[in-house]
Structure formats: structure tokens, C-alpha cells
Amino acid sequence: MRPDQAPRRPRAAGLLLAAGGGRRLGGRPKALLRHDGALLVERAARALREAGCARVHVVLGAGAAEVRERAELSGCVLVDNPGWADGMGSSLRAGLRSLAGTDARGALVSLVDQPGIGPEAYARVLDAFTGETCLVSAVYDGGRGHPVLLGSAHWAGVAETARGDRGAREYLREHSAEIRLVECGDVAEAYDIDTAADLGRLRPGGAH
Image (cartoon, rainbow, N blue to C red):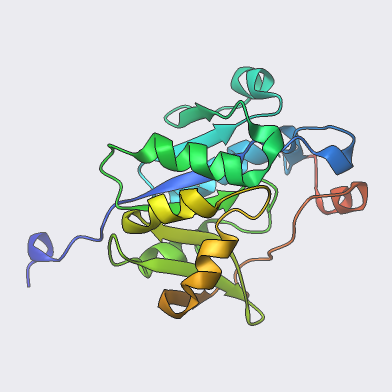
């Protein structure tokens, strides 16, 4: 088979949830935290692109105006979520709505406060994506985590159940038998930056 005859992988967009207000961090928007010389939102968006997402939608909430001013997110679609304080579910719904009508057949969902997950893990999950009905999840030490890839046939169902900080958790539990699991523990660390103690994992220095 010639290279131009090789089957093309279905198009999946990166969906970065970056609206969190950092309540347990004293109200510091997580998108604006710095790690290795770049803002978390910049690092995550860049990692999605490096993994192969031609389209990246970034959902903003807390500090949205400052993120727009300070972050280098050229080429990304910035989605405002006025209801960000209601939890991650509202940001997931806003992000999925923003992808409606695009050529994306899947959404690779990532969280801005997980800097230990980079392009290697994103690419592995993308490589397991087969089309609209597909569900894929990264796995760490036997437990599911992010990124999660939601085929477009599932977006409406996810949106119906995404409330509070549950995100897609309830929908994925109901469809657990359909999920393709991809081990990522050897290339990523799935920790969250949630509390002041977690800030020790961030290295603020380095070239921007």
C-alpha cells in the first residue's frame, strides 16, 4: 500500500479544561500557574498539538481575561464558560458544545492542572481512537485517568450527565465495558495541582 493510500486516523480535537479557580490554592486560577517557565495552560495546549491535535479548544473561566492577555495560545479556539464555578462538568459541556459543527470526530479531554501528563500520553490515547463510537482512557497503575477520548457519538450523553466536578465520570462508569484502556504510567504522572502542598511539584524557572 502506498503512503497516500494508508487509512487516515479519524480527526480528534484537543479539549483542554482550564477554567478552574483554584479555590484550595487561595483563588489562584490554575491556568496561570507557572511550571518550567511557561503557564500551565500554555504547556497543556502545546502538548496537545505535539501529540497530533490539529484543533485545540481551551475552556476558560476563572481569570479568563488575564489568561487571554498573558498566555500564548495562538491557533487555539478559546471558549468562555461563565458557569465555571459550577464545576468541571460545566466546562466539559461548554467545550463539547464548541466542537459541534466542526470536523472533529472525537474530543481528547485533558485537565490544565495535570502538568505531569504530556504529549507522549496524549499521543498514545489518540493512537487508540478509531471513530465516533469509540471511548478511550489512559490508565495509571490499573486506574483510569486523563486524558480521555470521547467519540462524538457520546458527546450528547456525556453532556447530559456532566454535573458538578464529576465531568464524564458517571457516563464512563455506565459505559465501562466499551472503553479502550491505554497504559500511560510509564510516560506520565497523573497528579493534580489542587492544594498549596501540591505547588511544590511546580518548577517556576526556566526559559519561557
